[in-house]
Length: 228
Ligand code: CA
Image (cartoon, rainbow, N blue to C red; front, side, top):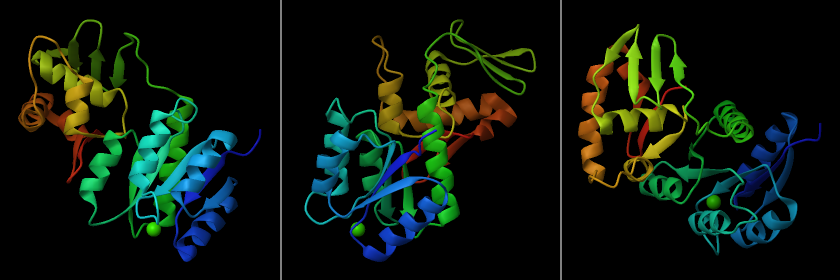
């Protein structure tokens, strides 16, 4: 099996070298790049398996790079993990909405970085199931076809919106979604769900799910995720 190719885009030499060294040691093929221009040019040709993309870059910033990569048919499938400074929560939200797959805040631990990379690469090889196959997590069963949720053989009475939010999150465990993405993901024609009402829906959903309500995690400043 050939090595998976990772682009690491970071203008700070020390961080770039540190990441490159550690990812190579993990068995990945790594190309270090220092500008957004380089990524946009090379991603098309080299088709990397993943791009680790710093937001703060000279020239074209990471968010614009992400947007362009996701817009271009030749590169839109490439998973992107953004590197952000702690103070850039708003950028995280923007990045996720532009199609980034995950983010890591600086300073980060290499162990966490590698775990995230593995997780994103694994998800990439197993695209989310859009069929009507039920999702089972221990005693919790979500039936997309029947719009039904069962915990320990007892049906849970969810509203349609609550069900859709739960299914949307549980379909891609571990992924963080902004409120805006959730609204878009569950979009129905006959009613309007707003960003803010998502919070209210989640409160109700957690209560009805009992113990399993803890599976729905709040990611501060970003949104929600269903725990892996
Ligand atoms: Ca930087």
